[in-house]
Length: 337
Image 1 (cartoon, rainbow, N blue to C red):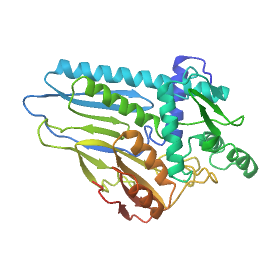
Image 2: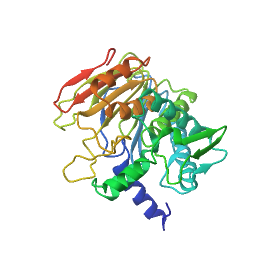
Image 3: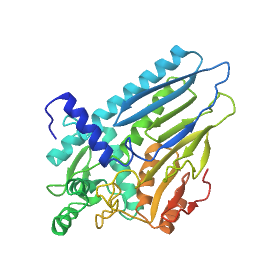
Image 4: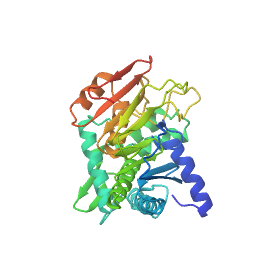
């Protein structure tokens, strides 16, 4: 996609993410509950607008200058990764792949995310599929009411096996195919930021990338874990769960924020099989070792029946989930919280 000016680029990028991404500014929010730091550590927090959302980093360090330095380096890494994964910027590797149908010498980060996505597609019986991009674009353009024939033709372009890797090269099997990594790239980027903080010697931190959470250590540098409240789909403040975290990640996916149609039946969570949006699960929250794992699995589980969602989550070591169904029921897998 080409744009006339930098301002137009940014406006289109933010608007598109708000509509298409499962975890953009209007995505289900996970609230971090406040706490104080110990007297020997200084808590430093910085917020920036990146990836079409608010990205917050909070660290505990021996001094404010050390905390600011660590956060600054982590944000540098976030910007570097955006330069790979932003599909609305024609200069990124992902955009080149989508525009040309192939990409030689792909960055290792892109290869890693594609490999993870392919594995998740297999594990979820195809529910998670990054090649859904043409269908999402069609639904956006037609306000959730595509011509049945055009929808069938577009669905023919969807299939995880159609994105093929040969060494460091990527290619699509058919013309017109495209990939969206909105369901995993933000999580991957948050994980990379976490690695930077750890390399800077930060042992206690929390990264909140538009509701995708990565935490380590404690909120006071001693024994108080980070406390995170899962968003209420009805926005009534009745949080489905409040969890305590000392390590790992949590992410939420839900179809109650961004809709394509006026009746709110078509939203950004789209089945690769028929292009429809599921109605039986309102939100899914996943705890996992990394944000990419939590983010990707939350998207996949949103497109499953509750029984299948629980079965898949229980088969994955270190993962747990909370489902809020259309009837308001709250279902949790073992080890949730």
